[in-house]
Length: 254
Ligand code: SF4
Image 1 (tube, rainbow, N blue to C red):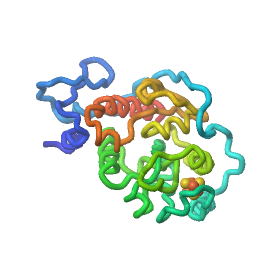
Image 2 (image 1 turned 120 degrees about the vertical axis):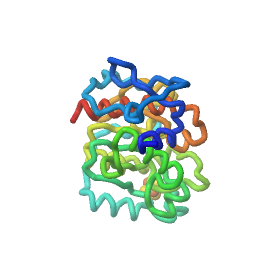
Image 3 (image 1 turned 90 degrees about the horizontal axis):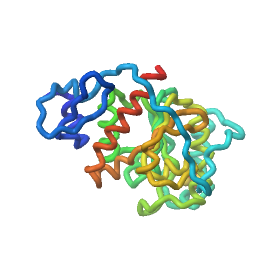
């Protein structure tokens, strides 16, 4: 069994995916196939990225769309986060979780907040959700050095509760500055909190993921948080569609 097949199986995408002949690589779920594994992960062909309407609801929770007021350099930013006491989460964290990956990556992923393991290790997306995210990225040919990954919140909410609006507002500049530094070609939000924060929208993720959005001129895709996909494996097929759209956008901008 090939590595690609194993990755897709890990993603829960069996029965396997097969490309439609003569079309751009769209996944077609077919129950009884004998495809070549290489066909399951489409080759990096140049295909157009979808047009980018920017549907945004009103009354959004966290102001993450303003221009950076005073962009600190990367080292200063890391230090500011490490020493931050701007919200109550500083009292319960083990350590801050700044982010990981390539500071010059073309793809930047934004999640919600550190969990228990992330708080312990000081890194985002470790544990099972992190493994699934790694496999999702590998399925479109991306390794950890091809991405930068950060969260909206840099400190763990106790008990893994949802982020509070005041915490997201207090932490907003850090993510804004991280994006300004990385300058990715493509942004991807994982889960509703990250989508709502960057898009200033409170629309359902199911609606948001059907569009290509823009953040400060950067194409932004909305998809599910890997932790949600672990709980709801039936949604992995939709996540695969999102991955293909993300890869198409990266290919187009290469
Ligand atoms: S969550 Fe953000 S704003 Fe709150 S203490 Fe941590 S780094 Fe500071």
